[in-house]
Amino acid sequence: MSCEELKEKQPDELEQLSFLEGTTADFADKGYDVKEASIILDNMKAKLETKKPGDNIGLNESLNQVRTTLHNAPIRFEFSCSYKPYIIILYELAFLGFWIWLGAIHLSGLNTSMQVEKWTWMQTIYLCAIAGSIGAISFTLHGIYTHMIHRSMDPTFTSWYLIRPIVGVVMGSFIGLVTTVILNGINATGDTAKIFTFAAAFLAGANERFAAEMISRFTSKIMGVGDKSEHQNK
Image (tube, rainbow, N blue to C red):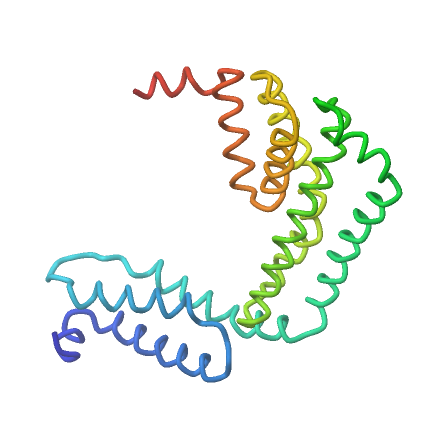
């Protein structure tokens, strides 16, 4: 389909699309991250090319998404190039240093905890809180590094970066307790059980989706929450 045929079909949308494509190209030349906008524009162009007379493909939402992305691109670029991401990195490293220091001064207690067959709930909370927070810090540092490379770090997520180590403590502790309850229920002990608990706590802190899935499965399988509604839906 030629450009002239497209204009006859949808002149307003095509003009907006062409304008946004030009703006996206200009922003890309300046080093802004416009990958998301480019993907949306390509999808919109494909829809226009395959559109039949009388079809309503509703591109307004996609157009608004592109405008929002392009509006935020210079803001993200400026923030990524500033000193502020480095302050967040130092904050995360300070949290990591705190856990290392805490582990060093309680080294004898940690050795004792690793030698017992089964952890008490206090041992589980303490050790898994550290694992969860370290997981959150690792994930945050990786995310900041990636966004800084692409100059796409969003300043609106600053608060989230700052509270992630604390969220990791909560998620790691809870998932660690859940994992310990399950492992104790099947009489799983020893180093394998402890490593599995550590890994679950670390992943819970690093990935909220993993933690949410674990919580959902726990409430469904162990406590029976959700089974009734799922049965009714069937």
